[in-house]
Each structure stands twice: as structure tokens, then as C-alpha cells.
Image 1 (tube, rainbow, N blue to C red):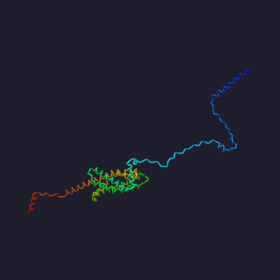
Image 2 (cartoon, one colour):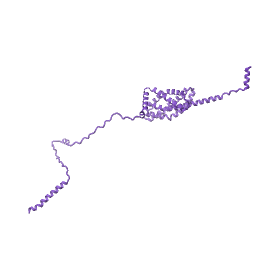
Image 3 (cartoon, one colour):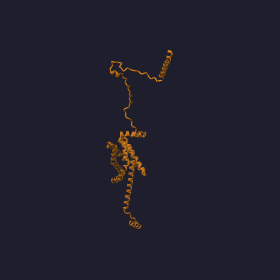
Length: 297
């Protein structure tokens, strides 16, 4: 009887133990936790050892930047240095300009005036006159060096903090001084080489310089502003020379028109003088017979 009474209790205890094991096997397993004593393992050590025992944060490694050269950035190459044969010709001209500036200017001026005179004579529609070309070459050769020295002086003066003000002053000074003097020299010297008298030379200057001076304002201010802003000093004469071919063509054409007007005026004066002379008296036949008789007697 006592054995039968304890059997249900034993069975119940075994069943409860298996049920707890089954629940424990279904729960997720975590890593075992380490417990450390809050007591100092080294009782003789002070706070310095405690700070030394703390883990140090990982050091951040800073890489060195890529080394950059000390040379400045290369500017873009200008357009006139990428034109092949034209660029080489311009560089040769610049070297000649630096070595022999006056001789280079004289040769350049001769070429400009030759091309301008040939073009002007072609536009005029008349037969080619070599004496006109000779006069133009003399005018260009004499004006080459003074014109070069003028533009060198102009580039070194009137340079202010404002680039726009500097260019504006240079344009005004150039148009008021150089253009007036050069146009007077051009037309006056042409008339002198043609053999005109001082009154005729003054008349040529009076009729041509005002017209050319007004028309110069339509072209040369823009050329001067562009040249002093974008063109290096050794290439300014080349740039101005290319424009001057057209301008000298206009001046030569204007000078030829003045010559034609003077020739027409001279013919008109000759015709007027001839009209004022008394007309010759025509002798009749009886008068001729009387003279013959007097001679025979």
C-alpha cells in the first residue's frame, strides 16, 4: 500500500522534469556572460593604473594628400599661335621686330603702301601709273619709323587703373593728334611729290583731310581698342598693317579723286582763259590780193 501511494508522486515529478527540459530546449541560447568583480585586482595600484587599464580608442589614420606641383596652371594657347604656317610667319616677324625694329617697320610699310596703291589704281579703273606707285612708296618709307615710335609711346602712356578708361583716352589722343597729322602729311606730301605749288598743296589738304578724318572715326577706334586689349605688342604692327592695307587703299583712292578734280578744274580754267582772248580776224580774198600787190611793188 505505501508503494502504490508513492508511485503517482514519482511519475508526476519525472513528467515535470521532462517538461522543463523541453521548454529550455526551445528558448534561444545566448552567449555566457562574464562577471567581473568590481574590486581592484591590484589593490596596490592607484588611479593611474586604472586609467592605463582602460582600452584606448582606435587611432584614425589620415592619409597624405596627393602632392601637387608648384608650377602654375598652363593658360590656353591663343588662337593666333595655332594657325600653322601663319603662326610660324608671325613668330619670325616678331623676332625680326625685336632685333631690327626700324628696318622691319620700313619693309612692312613699303609692302602695305605697294598693295594699297595697286588696289586703289585697280579700283579707279584707269591705266596703271608707275609714278603714282613710286610716290606712295616714298610716302610710306618716310612715315614708317615715326608711326612706329608713336604707337610705342602711346602703349607706354595713358595707362590707368581702369582698362576701359585707358583705352578710351588712347583712342581720343590717337584720333585727335596722330590721325590729323598723318592724313595732312599723306595728302600734302603726295601733292608735293607730284609737283604742285604751295597753294595747290594747301588746297589738296583742305579738301581731303576733313573727309578722311571723319571716316577714320568709323574704323580706327575699334582697331585700336582691339589691338591694345588682345594683341601682344610685337604683333600689333602686323595686325594694324593688315587693316592699313584697306585704309591706305581708301586714302590713295581719295587722293586720286582729288587729282582728277584738280585736273578738271585746271582744264576749266584754261578753257575760260581761252574764251576771254580776242578771236583772230579772218582776212577776205580782196585784202589778200591787195597785200600781194604791195609785196610785188
